[in-house]
Length: 103
Image (tube, rainbow, N blue to C red; front, side, top):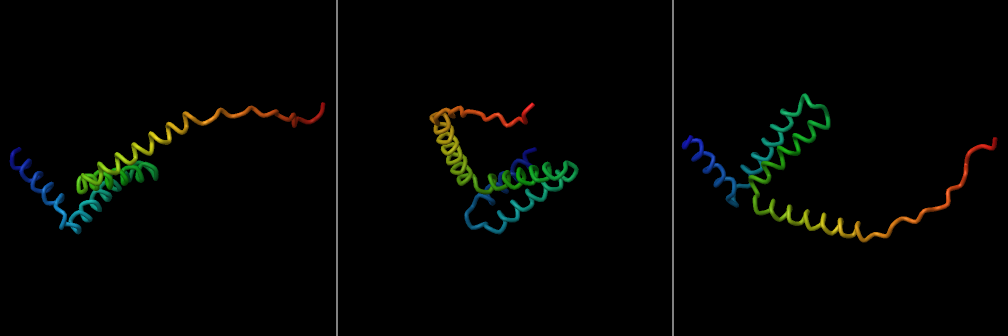
């Protein structure tokens, strides 16, 4: 157990260093391929979702600071959209024209 923990910590330290662009790209690609393989039996939408989750997970593992920035920006945009939605005026009911054929 301790050997596995040491290996995982060393791998994490290696991937979080700035000069390791190619290994980071390889790790993100492997995450996407793993998600694709895991989603093969789930259909096109499931394959897309598992591939996206695999890519995003490895990208978050390789770029933790950037991931936090993206999450904070996304939350700010979501809050702004929610507040503008709440402040939007209510729709005006229009007069409906009777388009049914005569009897």
